[in-house]
Length: 286
Image (cartoon, rainbow, N blue to C red; front, side, top):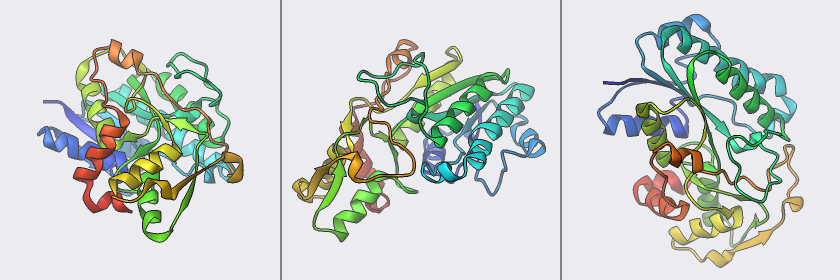
């Protein structure tokens, strides 16, 4: 039986990884940030000992905050994952490290493939790109998995925010000029478990729910799942809502390599959202 370790187990993806692995009766240990500091070499060596697959779901996720704290973001998203990878290499464990669409510039018009050059435009994106390089250069058997537009029943995410705003406001303005693939953390977790059990060649892979939409389109879908009028969502443009960190205008990631490796394709994003509300209960309602 494969023995798993999940770092960042308190986050939305980490929590769903534990759920998916528990449902599969896997041998899994979850460690939150408070329980395991992945910047501590000694603690990492102890945690990884006897483990077959380590999924690193820990990291700095405050995209705007990274603009004024790039050193700290780099430490969390680049230096620490490199240490996890080194510990995995020493222990003979496989590592799965989570990355993001923010490593790309966002100016493409067709889905990004794994081999496309990374040109991050934000401090967060730079820290994640550096983390990818550190993991891949570690000597570990490592997978870097880029995901995008993640939502789940815990933590801060767009779906939960829209559900809260549906209760609080008559109308909501949402940007309609950013494109991506909304991805349910439970589906991503199942994909990562399949990857860890697969034995496919290490390297960079993309994994998101299929299809794409805009934040405006996703917001309308959330309102529909809540039984609310989607016309209460009004389209707007990114320049109306300036943020410290630039947002990619196009974040769609190609799944061609994932599927060519024989890994299970994730369902369309709209079907995933329906299922997420069915099983997520109050957790997705903000």
